[in-house]
Figure 1 (cartoon, rainbow, N blue to C red):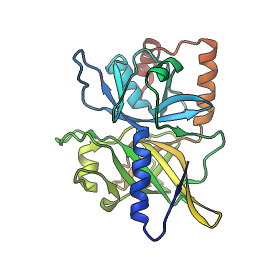
Figure 2: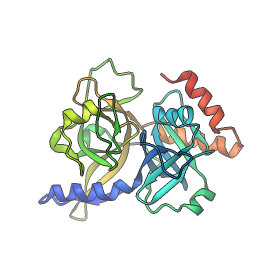
Figure 3: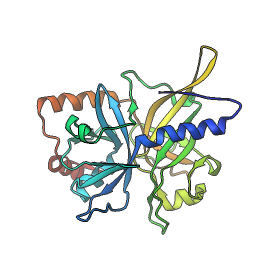
Length: 274
């Protein structure tokens, strides 16, 4: 994806990018017997790859959906309410990322107006990006906090870390401060880190590309947020560098008719999740 970027008004451009990407991010809610959905427990990105549609999220979010809620889950964004019960899902052992396949019949009933297009090639160096935008629905953490129903954005920068306490596979570290939070609610960095979680939120890196005398930003899905950085600097995401290979393998297994339903996946996640 590409965005025009006006160097004379960067804040307005950031707001426009935030508004364009936000509808592609869904909040995952448990589906109750009543028509109402339960509180959000994670985020995911509506992704288009090789003509197929997926929700890409964190393994911990998929485990919550399958183990705790029996995949009786809704993916919500604006007026969109996608029922995820019975859909094929997978999470490889070598990644902290998971995917839920959205089949054509479901897409016919719930057409997607917004979807992040993912290419077949690799992603560029995150340290070379202009910035990395984290987009997600905050989930309440262990400390008491108000429930926030709106998506927030964090304008962050990738950095190298020697933090060996992180257990995230293929970690991508990003930092931000209170001025970098895009939200309708009043949030500062200490309050966000202490009271909320952003698990499953996509980390979209944007890179300058000068073409035809215009300044453009090209967007790449660089990672999926797993946890807050334990040093209190920002967030730790799992890199999506291996995501295309995982999705290719997932699609091949679906074509063969391999079982990726809730009972089998829930059993594996409950047994092996860290």
